[in-house]
Length: 412
Image 1: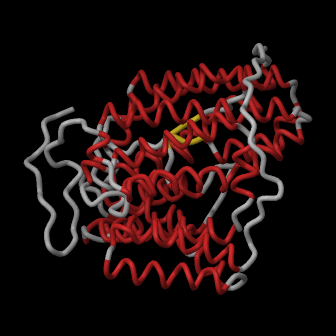
Image 2: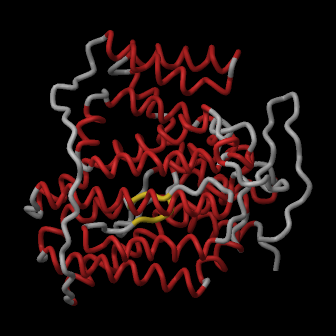
Image 3: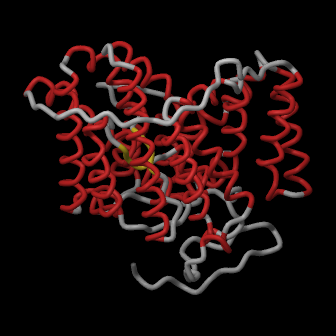
């Protein structure tokens, strides 16, 4: 990477050291703070609870065995863990990798219509396309030309829907949400570094007091990988492989890189894309439908709540990867663990953990008056939840913002 400018120290107003400041020596243990560990855990927990049910539903629709579904979770978890840890340490940035949630939703309907070995072959094709895009550098070229205000607005729009989930949850579970909300405000006032961890502990205690924790179905069992030899068919490639690739790029990798850019991390995108493509290829025979850059969970590790020093936030992603490893080793057991927590608790802690990233995204999006209206359009379309052609609002928000920028603001 290019040489970074001199470091900008933190100031009394609680602004953090910049991500593009002079990098520190690599000392993961010394750089770790309690807030980093908590951010990594919350990111992992949010990623699993938000879409693990989609994979179970897809597996059941395709009549997969419990062993195959457990192997699917194991493959995704290990692939995410290895890429998250290695890339974060390599580039000294909070690079979080996740499975494709829109891809899992796509498989609910498409996986049942093809033989499982053909579906594995389609996963391999998707991985090869990711590697090709990463190696050629096409994605990096496109992202370098993206105006910074649009990237920030895209981030804010993605996270906005998660953030407002806190207040929607208060309608049905008022006591738990209010306990967590006021705990967050009070601790944020007096000890901001410990706001999220304290809120999480209070939330668990409040859920227990309200009788909302249920460990009756919890059991511990190690995952056993199940290998399936890939077979290839044109129908599976067209119905699964290519749509998975498009969804991964448009709905995951684009907003995922935008999250990094919005928080000041200028990590080259090509190595990130081809690395996730290689991991997807290796673990495809065990059920992995593909891993890619995370957006929402990544923002929990790139924001100021993860660490006061932006140069040390990579440790939050490393801890997220460690928790991925633990979850993957236990396989489907992790689903039973997260099922013990009420959904309101997970939604609320995720929303509160993203407040800082939402504020930063909105502030950066509106900082340039010339780009303000295109940024607003990007934010509104992304936050709307619009879905066209099975592609989510993050992609269409970016398209709308770029078009508006070209008409309203771009120089000739």
